Length: 430
Image (cartoon, rainbow, N blue to C red; front, side, top):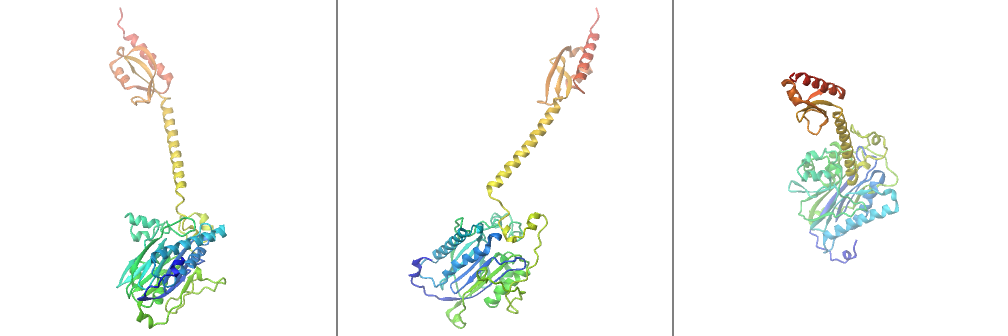
């Protein structure tokens, strides 16, 4: 962090945090790509994305940078410290990609709460979330940077519909070391009795606000964090689940309890040697091990190549929408194809009409026309004659006004010859 921060005068802390963090791989994922950190001054959740590009490295790298904020802030701007911390995490991920190009495409969300003893600065990028539980009321502090959130903001779908939307995991902002993003940063005044809850979308993506509030309404931070993970898995979460719960205590309340050590959970805390997976038993036994993985159900209609691909399904989290330039190219090509088919159809129809003939009236004489009688643009004079129309029977004259269809040009010539013969016979004799 910046050197200026190390020379600032510490602010007088009126409150303390009592916290607990937990991260679980979940029922489907084979690897935990979430990372979390909880300390006396800092709470942070990062949800890595990337599949083969190792989202676990992105999230653990970000936590490695952000945890340096976990010291009592000085009198400087708390919001600036959070912003700087997120940018440092962004640069650290860029450094990882520079060292290993195979990591290109990795990224992570980041939701941070930096505490100074009186208030908290919240920093946010992505779809992890921060909540405040105060006086029995739950408030969502952060706004998801997702495609479905834009649909909600526009009034096109509801919160409930967003939970089952096919593109609910399409994130519009993330720390990826490549694209500069401006995080949402704001200050939150705290009072004793407040409870902060930070989580990855493995929890908030399946739990209704009422269920979250119900769990946060009682028990210790440890109980609430474990119970929220358990509730997320029971609700059908198919993602990694990370939950951090922290209570705001007075100095007197904090003195009654031994100080807690900082906690690092998820990918950032994993050892090189994996421990055996055990069933998650929730708060009743205190076991916070990972759940035994089960086969993921792939919805009907998903391309077989995805079904057969051994890469972690997390790799497809950003997949639903290709870059805009390719989408426009496909639309233009589709339009060209449609116009081409339409042109061929019209040309074929016009060609057919020009193979049709009929006999009609042209300036008082019998004439041969090519095309369809009575259709402007599809009918034209082909050959005139010197046979007067008024020399024919009245009924035949009326038919010629409408046009008499024939099978082909030869039949049209025969009919004109016939009318010429009738006209000659109809002339009065001397």
